[in-house]
Amino acid sequence: MLSGLEKIVQSIAEMRNANSDAHGVGSRRIIIRGCEARLVMNSAITFCEYMISVHDK
Image 1 (tube, one colour):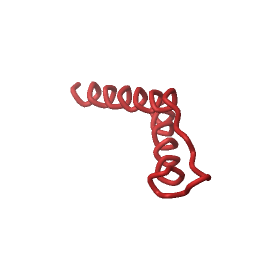
Image 2: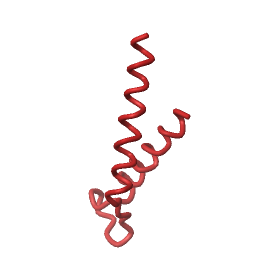
Image 3: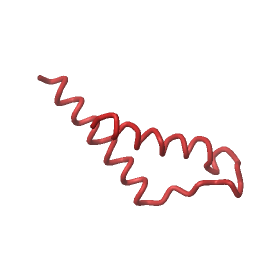
């Protein structure tokens, strides 16, 4: 389950790093929509909250 959340975050991060306008790829740029950004953000938050709760036990 946790690896699934991690894969979501990692996949979007790789798309952003490899194919965004931050690296000048021009027309090959992948646009990350708001819904995808929210998915990554919420997945990262959920993963971190879980890890904190496990560590606190």
